[in-house]
Picture: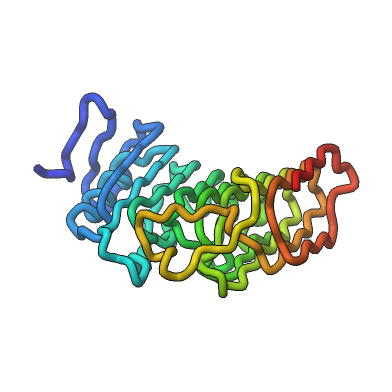
Amino acid sequence: MNWDSYVHPRLGFAGAARGQTATPYVKRLCLAYRKDVPMECRYADEFIALAAASSLELFLNCPKNLRNDDAGPWSLHLPAATACLSMESCWYSVRPPHVHGPGASALKSLTFKDSFMVLHPGYLQDTAFPSLEELHISGCTLSGSIEITSATMPRLKHLRIADVSVVSLGTAAAIAVLADELTTLRVSCHDGGKPDPPSSHEMLCVETLFRASFTEYSYFRLRAPKLRVFDWRCCYAKEVRVDAVGRHLSDVVIEL
């Protein structure tokens, strides 16, 4: 099949000659593929480019035998039309991609979810999303401390962190939120109680669904001078530092 001239009558997207921009007919594109299979990755990249969808959802699969390491670094080229990006992984750990292309600057909503998506230290500091307004991190795992700052997300207004765990008992993971435009922050763990974090052995078992109830962050730091909504439910941190919040803080929910 010649993808350069392909037109799908039901999906509604048209391929363009290489080097040209495809006509953006698709509003929402969902792709499920195996990240460790080069052919599937190549066709997924072509679908993303041809569709130029405003909303992109990726479901990434990896083999079960990746028990001692993650699936490795990868990159994602976003068309300019992409405003919303959601990524979910299956089986075992997939780190978020290096996002580049015109869509990286236009992206307004970003979601990471699933227990096997691993956030490494430095990722959110090294990848710039200048137009991002909403960031959701759900069910992911921290391999170390992360920072969410205005340096890379200057327009971030809404942040949700739910069921975010750490790799093992010996991992000192902190979360710092230093966002000048942030108005809404929701941090939650849906499971009650505070059992010990999973051991390294348990972490590497594919069948184990580690959850944020196992987590005790080394600290949680917040600086959000325009914050209006602060929702903290069943989360544990050895230290919580609040440098600044909005003068017009209107909604506060604390659940211990």
